Image: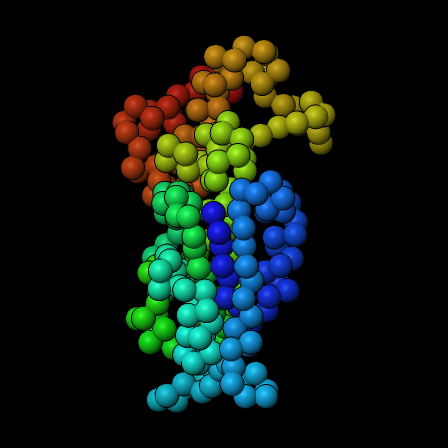
Length: 237
């Protein structure tokens, strides 16, 4: 997969791809990326890329000229182009999975009050929200989307890890424990020390259902009745 990120702050984006899972994915050739500086496409000596909104109001808006030229330089019209915005469609695990199947993605990092609507109308395929809140940095939102997408790529993370994490099958992930067996007077659940893998799988499923009911009742409501029944099962803990 090739990821192209249009931004006023390319160093911000570069630092993400230089660390952790993203860096390994790049090193192994699973992904390629480009951080394109929108300011390089400004046409004055100050590199101006924003202006006051028509109709008045607080803040500034990214101008269509520099941003449009940046998008044209990466042939965005031929690729799936994403604009992270609080007013977009909510990013979900299934949405990230769909995006991960693209060969190329272009992401636009907004700033200030956003970008000129004509850019959205001309270039953008997906307006995506990462949650019901507002960030000052479009780079943060874009990299959340990038991270959710690239980790699903073949070979980036083990299939076992992907199968067992939150939202797989509509459930949140079960609690995790590691050494020591006792911490602050609290004991690791006995079943996890038993070596009985069938019992461990049963415990993990039960705890996933209970956690989903407690933390995300909206997800719990969508489960089938058999899974919902597990939440009230007071069996092995």
